[in-house]
Image (cartoon, rainbow, N blue to C red):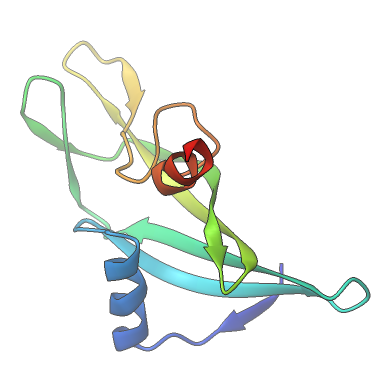
Length: 123
């Protein structure tokens, strides 16, 4: 994709706070994609969760991830450059054995935009 920035623990915490993330969600990586010919930069923030994290089922009980599915969302621009969030979203099995994707706190189900991007676009 692009140049991977080496984020220390403090930088990861700052981006996690800025995005409003709470455990088990955390920033894993920040990349800057640069097209020198066009003078465009894009930020790519990868969000993850700790292995073994528990996720809520509709009945309130908790379970670990069954598998994951890769998703991406357009976020508000960062320093006037487009920004995208990427995450391997966990999927869980409910009591009946049906596989369901976990709801992420930064976007509506099925949306390709973050909640903040949608709110800004509406204003």
